[in-house]
Length: 260
Image 1 (cartoon, rainbow, N blue to C red):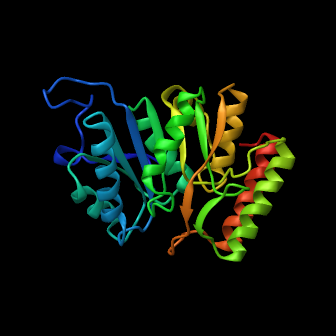
Image 2: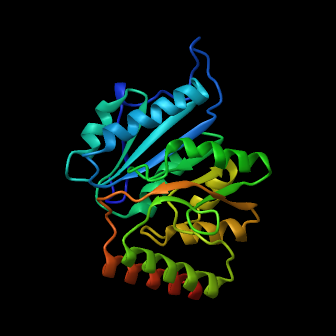
């Protein structure tokens, strides 16, 4: 197995594919929820319980949850594997970054709609209904939006993270003439076609991957929409102020120079 390969839990930890209804017949998978995780042992069980309950109520049998463990060493994968027999677990053998985890999950998914959401559920999973509504209006990629005149933020991030996000977003918008206001929100929805096309081309492994995905979506001609979502800051972020902000800006420069 190569260092960058992905292992998938087997047996009773993995939903059989294709997804099957209560009568045992194969049914199209309506939605896939991809949850990238790194050192999330303290909350992954509650997160999965919440996500599965929402999906059971909204989509009956035609859904899947994919947890992508990004090389955690705290037992995240083990807890996720025991949380619900219908949850698929993918494991990256080493920590590669959120972008790599989301990409692995998106390309392993089978849903006609593919949602990425953070393990802390800073945006409640129920907000997926809003994004799906935008799909009904013709969008193929929907970006959750936290900032703006109709902001629905309950509890804001620490001031230094707000500044980091705003400066990065502004730099990216100026460098690439992008009009979207909240490129870094961890709550995004893709059609199957958009997810396959975008994530097969994506190369950035860490936090600037959101911006790369939006650029790829635009280049490939997919219709993009923004949708205000409820959001609340959660403690326990893995973002490192200096190291990650530096890495994000370097990634922007590489994207501008065509080096990724």
